[in-house]
Image 1 (cartoon, helix red, strand yellow):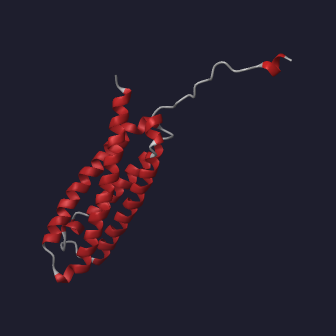
Image 2 (cartoon, one colour; image 1 turned 180 degrees about the vertical axis):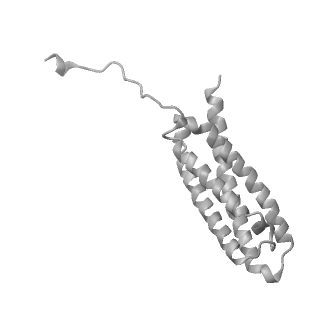
Image 3 (tube, one colour; image 1 turned 45 degrees about the vertical axis):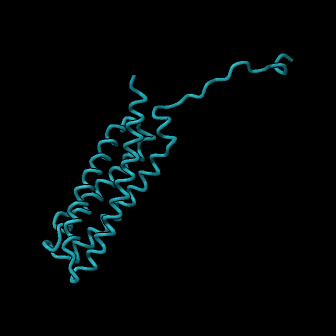
Length: 158
């Protein structure tokens, strides 16, 4: 009969894993968006590689969308793996930061192409504007993730 009168006097605290606060912000969702935009960038790059001469634009010459697309696919994959492998936090920060730098350089080169707007290349230049918008989204997502990562690093260090 002693079991019927049992009352818990102390709650067992929930064990919080590493990166608990960061993972509550759902970096995997942002990583998935990065991967999707990266695949779109690679697709646009393939389209340009097939339909345009190599020297027609800096965008095609330097394979900018291939480069940024692959970087953001990798950044998104690493961000998705943070839940299972918290030790990937520094790598994820580095890849996201590299993606921001690559996208800014690519945006500058696309801007040079857009300054040389020509009616003959109007369809391609419109797609470059689309790619510029996609890179803006990628930079925005990476900047948010980098902000979260820095905040998490500061919370862990004394």
